[in-house]
Length: 394
Ligand code: NDP
Image (tube, rainbow, N blue to C red; front, side, top):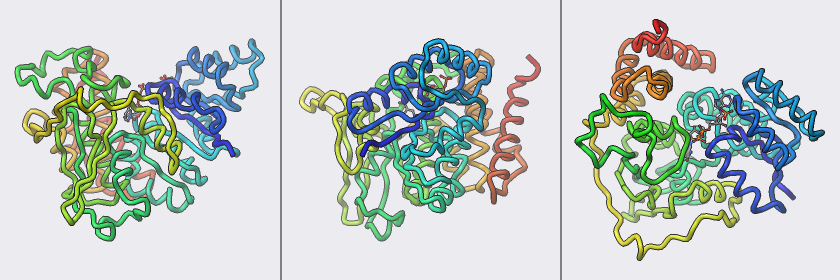
């Protein structure tokens, strides 16, 4: 039977890679719904190519433009709008798999909707996991959903754990998780002045082609901090069991160390189609289109400790995990505001960790027992970050 998929974030970089894999296996997969924010032109093109039942855009004007295009071409797709339209696309009857690849915390409600109706969730949207934390994991369990990681590091860990792993590292003999990090464009260049870095320089990742937000996160190494938080919840490991290792080549995507001293690694070329195909096909293996790994040509794989002074976002993430349940939410929210300001020319690269640190110090909300609490902590941190960067005075 074919898997029917909702693709949240269909117009982005993960969306492109996913549709490439899906198009290679028309006998196995059909696109049931596509969702994004405002890119109606690309969405119309996806509707032509994949003929989904539903297309949802968060931006209502863009949704109207898409509906006009769909009507003009007589396509069979129903257009939905707004946050509720995204949630409907994620919980559509007949869809069994939801690939969550919206960028930012804004992707949480639709991903939670998929969890509550028991879908198989392929998760790229790490910010949703960081904000949702334990609440998200509980919603997955309660809704009878399945969670498979797409983020290359977490997908690598998933592949290195036993297939029977039941969220208990002790039972599985797991001692540590080693999260690899490329270090981004600036790690090997101590001479770079973080006050003058431009968005183009920050987005020039040495190994991966990704969306702009995650590219900046890689450059500050906040991406690795968010991934530590993501790993903590996905695999139920203590933060002290997660170590970051800088591995410039992005070939070893992460490792799991067992109590007997064995260390298992997953290796592949840096191409997101590999983890996406792994999760789409699991437990079977599917061709992804990624080039085979040529180890002799690579010759050298290097590993080193991260520079935690130059990249303070790593410690901010560990500190947030140790503080209280609202701290990772505040960290993520402050980072989203600061990265957006940097990409729009309203903040310096060096303002990103500074803003996050200031928000963590000034916030007042620390209690998270419900989604409303989580959203309140998120809103407070966004307000504090905007104040700190004086964004409303512009
Ligand atoms: P992109 O910037 O390329 O794409 C973002 C997607 O999210 C677009 O489809 C965009 O729609 C959509 N979107 C943005 N805002 C909203 C909104 N308010 N409502 C609905 N949809 C919205 O990002 P990436 O594909 O690079 O990353 C997506 C997620 O995957 C991120 O969380 C990232 O951390 C994670 N990830 C990405 C990797 C990569 O290699 N790219 C690797 C591992 C994880 P529109 O085009 O209409 O604006």
